[in-house]
Structures are given as C-alpha cells and as structure tokens.
Length: 230
Length: 230
DNA sequence: CGAGGCACTGCCGGAAACTGACAGTTCCCG
DNA sequence: CGGGAACTGTCAGTTTCCGGCAGTGCCTCG
Image (cartoon, rainbow over all chains, first blue to last red; front, top):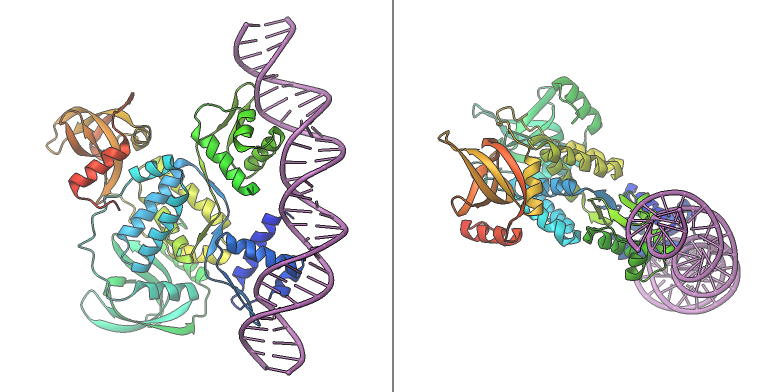
C-alpha cells in the first residue's frame, strides 16, 4: 500500500471515531509502527487536517473532511461556483451562508487565474430576498438536530394564526418555492409534516435521539410523497 | 520539491498551453528527466487527468482542472452539495445542469457514508419550474462566447414584442428573480444592456474577439450599477 | 521514401525517502 | 507518583524514486 493511500485510511479511521483514539491503537489498525504513525499525522497536519492530540487521551479529528484530488471540467467548476454563490446569497441560514462563502474562497484560491475569471463571469443577480420572511429562530439548530438525529420541540404558528407546540423528528430541510421548510415526523399528528421555518416561533433542542434512522425516514417519506430520490 | 507538488506544476504547465507541448520541453521546465516525466504523466492519467500525447506533436490536456486535496467542514460540504443540487434542478441550461449533476456525483462518491447521509438530508424541494419560460436558444453557446471573449449576434424580442438584431459583447450570465439574463455591451445602444435569455430568439456566435478584457468590462459595469463585487 | 523527432516501455544502478527500533522528554490521568 | 501517551532525535535497513540506456512504433518533414 502506498503512503498516500495509507494517509487517507488514517483520516477515515479518525473520522469514524467520536472518542479520542490512541496512537498505538491507530498504528496497530494500520499495520505500521508508532513512529511512522506520528510522522503520518504530522504530514496530514501539514496538509491542513485539523488533528489534535493530547497526552493521556488520544487523537481527535475536528469535524471536517479532506477531499482527495478531484478532476472537474470547466463546466463542473462553474456549476459548483454558481451553486455556492446562490447558497451564500440566498440562504437565510447565516451559518450555511457563511460556510458557502468559505467553501467558495477555498475553491477560488486554488483555481488558475484563467478559470477564476471564467467563474466570476457567471455571477448571480439574485434579488436580495427582501420579501423573504425573516426567520425568528436559528435554522442552524435544526440542521444540528438533523445531523445528530435528535428530537426537537417547536412552537408553530399555522396558516390560521393559531399556535401549537409540537415534538418532531426532523430529517430534512428543503426549499419550496422560496420558503424554507423542515420536514419531520410529527408526534402530535403521528404522521409526516412540513413546517415553514419562518413560522416557527420558538425552538428547543433536546438530547433525545429519535428511534428511526434518518435515512429510513427519508426513504419512507419520499415513497409516500412520490418524490424521486434526486 | 515533493512529487505531489511537481505533479500539480505539471498540470499547471499543460493547462497554460493551447498548443501541444513536447515531453522534452516539459521535462526541461520542470527540471526532471524525460523518463520521470513519462512516469509523472502516467500517474496523472491514472488519477483521471485527460492528457493525450501524440508522437511527433506533443501533449495536450483536454479542458478540465484538477482540484488539489482540500479540507472542508461539514457545513461547507453541505453548502456545496445544496448549491449543486439547486443548479442541477433549477438551471434551464441543459449543459450546466448536467455538469452540476456530474460534479455532485463525483463529490458524493468520495464522501464518507456519514457525511453523505448528512448531505442528502439537506435536500431540495425546488418547484419543478414549470412556469419558467422555455429558452429557445442554447445558453451554452453564450457561456462559451463569454469564456472566449467573443462577440455575439442575437435576435431579441423586447417587452413590446418588437424584434431587433444586436451585436453584443457578453461578459456575464446572471439570475434575476428566476429569469436568466446575459449582460453585455450592446453595440447598437453603445451601452451596457441586460437581455433576458428566454427572449432571445436566435443566436449566432462569431469568431470576432471583442476589444476589452472581460474582467475590465465586468468591473466597469459593476461600478456603474453599484453592485458589490460579491 | 528515408531521417529524425517523439511517445512509450522495460531494465538497472545509484540516490533519496521512508520505515522501524530505540532512547529520551514532557504532559496528563488515576 | 507511576503509567500511559504525545512528541522528538538518531540511526541502520528497506523501499521507492529517479536518471540513463536501449529498443519499438508512430508521425512529420525534407
């Protein structure tokens, strides 16, 4: 096995563990000596991986992912840049918007000048979404709950103005027309429901993990709604 | 210089040349032997680079670009995926739409399963754009003209229904509300003009390069319109 | 048509890098 | 305070890399 492949394997190992994992353990799994492991970790850190080691504990990889070298055509790059621009500007989720900008600048930074110009020529004139309803809650909290498969308690104001409290199992955030909605299982109705994010007036994250896997719920929901998987 | 850096340098060299460049020349520029150059090219090809060599001529890199290993946070990945989904589904430009899908599948292919699920959880429910006016021309032609800084002759139907022929210097494609427009210098009006792509009834690309640099026109237009550079 | 240039491959010896083992230091935890 | 773990330096042994050489097939140009 070549060195570069081994480095990717090391990343994979670190990513799959939430708890810190010790150097000797990693070395054993990879079939290399401890000394070499330390060198490999140093190499990864030099390449930008955010690996932290603490004596007595082990190594942890801060959330993130390293994309291996990828080949894109000019059109593909332009599509990615255009999409990221749209997210950066259009998304009302402040965190997601900032992430899009960061991703964009990382990509632009490594683009040759010729392609960078080309990418900048496909710009966005998206209307500044003034008419878009302001969210009263932090959509990032919802995204976090989805990622960790946690239940969520929300205050929701229906179309008729009546307010209700619901516990939902969120598994997806989507855009419908220009309104963002969170889709989840509603414990009150015992059915799938969509909630417009701009109508959620309060939000309480919980530590309660919901029972089904997110992917399973997504699949069931898609089948019921008759939505193609892409 | 490490081997991986050298491989990137090699790509850079190939990208900047339009004409085929011979192996000995490349080897000299990189400061390596011919034998090693052949090995490096074989490595790049194995990694997916579309390099073609012909005896008597030299090497050419088919249009494309290799992104070096990049570190993205989970949020950044999600932003990119979301944006690409939007382009794939929303864009009326068939070529761009397909490129977005291809880029998406390339990215998803290398994502660890955990992140892939997470990325799929942020889906798009974009309305299927039924009301979006059908373009009568191939927007890809416009994009190509922009990339190559070529003049374009268009038949344009104004809001009043009157048709006119214009020669424009296109430098940007944008989205305004949900209508795509091409922005360029209009030779007829001697001023910047925006043209809704769904109102362009005919399109003739030319080989005539327009005089100003695209970036310069973009800058001038932005200043006049008072649009921030992002 | 022949000569020369070039892409491409296999082989080999020397150079460079990688690897593992050992020793030693610092820090955290029980 | 002892043990475990993160680190660093050093040094042989091994692997990989690199340049040179020889050879084949293709193309272009004179």
